[in-house]
Amino acid sequence: MASSKYLINDFHLKSIYNPFLLLVVMLFLSGCNFNSKTESLKTYKSPVSNDEFFQEIGQEIGLDFVHSIGADHMKNIVESVGGGAAFLDYDQDGFIDIFTCSGTWIEGFSKSKEPDKLPHNHLYRNMHNGTFKDVTNITKVDASWFTMGITVGDFNNDAYPDIYLSNYGPNVLYQNNGDGTFTDVTKKAKVGGGKECSVGVVWLDYDNDGLLDLYVGNYLNFDPNYKYYYAPDGFPGPLAYDSQADILYHNKGNGIFEDVTKKMGITDIDGRAMGVGAADYDDDGFVDIYVANDHTVNYFWHNDAGKGFTNRGIMSGTAFSQSGEATVSMSVDFSDYNGDELLDMFISDDNYCSLYENIGNGLFNDKSYAAGISVASGQFVGWSSSFLDYDNDGDADIFKTNGELKHKYGQEDQLFENVGNGKFDDVSVEKGKYFQEEYVGRGACLGDYDNDGDIDIYIENLDSEGKFLRNNKGNLNNWITLNLIGQTSNRDGIGSRIKIISGGKVQTAQKKSASGYLSQNDPRLHFGIMKNTIVERIEIKWPSGKFQKIENVKANQILTIKEPN
Image 1 (cartoon, rainbow, N blue to C red):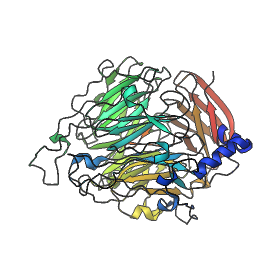
Image 2: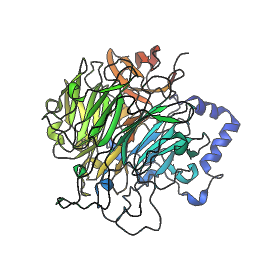
Image 3: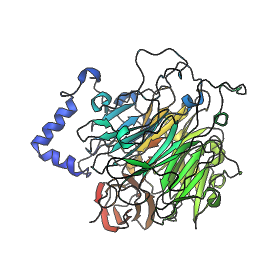
Image 4: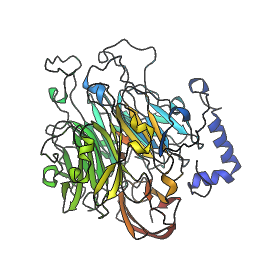
């Protein structure tokens, strides 16, 4: 639970001293003015911390979500690839909430009887006391879609985060109304697509005009009636189906988006997109796009100053694995794991994974074997992977979910600790009992849900209940968390490049939307700083080109930073 010494945000602080606002908040928390018949009235209490570094407490704190494939048995590849989850602060109260994605039953697609109640996505509100409340119906996001993933961003710059869902079938854009509810504006915005099977999606401002654009990674042209007789392991794989081209939508600023895929030079030859990520890997001021494809070469779309994109996957050394193969790539994340101020990448797949070290000049080296990750990963099928500093020691560690591809066979998830000199150790087993259990992992989102200064983890498991890992010991070291607010740039500050210096150590990060597999992490940026009590300098390069420097910042606070006018 957050201590009073932590700065939360302006709204939260003001509500403490404004009786009217406080009354409004209390009424909201009580649920007395909402549809109480459709929401759980059960109250939860956050359990006492045990001696584990990561303690699984999901059911105890109200996270009762169960992912569904919409059928009794898994019969096709589409059912096998969902779903994601996101941390977001949908009501802007300073505490991050959780959105979970689920499949559902679809007539003619699901090979089972229609259930009495259709599975659907869920939104859980953070109750500020270490627990959550299911507010799906209240917020009006309870429609049943076969949802794969999620990306969150404020596309209209009204200070409230909006939600985009990638689905089997038309995708969905939920506009945040700012009153605790959402409205489906997909048709008006023209971002629904058609019959695509969309998977990875990401918000980005590719032309730095202050408006968030949207990249939609499409998977394959699935036909539920297609007969394929060469699938001894259960059902046809991705190469049995034609690929579907990705889509880039440009935000026109009037609530409407334009398909600019061909105009911007994005040609999808035979990709089957899974994870999609966006970051400025060459620090030229324009955000680039990486697409992790299934069984085919990965794409690395270099942003040519907002005027077009060029695929530099092969040129950069990131299109194939270290063995020179097109892998079953699932997810991508960016971070500077070796402290050289260049953004590196981690790609999870069904084999040995790839840790790409950025060596500058647009080139990468695959360091997965040298780093000690490949051997430990090789026995698992990796899905969502994200960089994090789980112990606040000032470097980037890696969390990875695992689970079988075509069968609901569980595998242990993994935590890799950055031990310096480019090396990682698998410390999973020693960090909690959870890591000794087997689950069919898919998406995962990471963030500080209780504002106590360390990173917690929510995991989605295929056709099973989600798991929540509370971090009990990360805040034994000091930290700083940054909440960016753009003014000339997009309001989320997505695309901003951040550098902090504490104790003489430099850390570099990028503000992103989507992270890992089909998921999105805490919208705030978290840095561990060991035992240092001061951050000597914070430097921010905003997408607008503006540069900001803040000096001598006290540790252990959530600091809101506005872009200068």
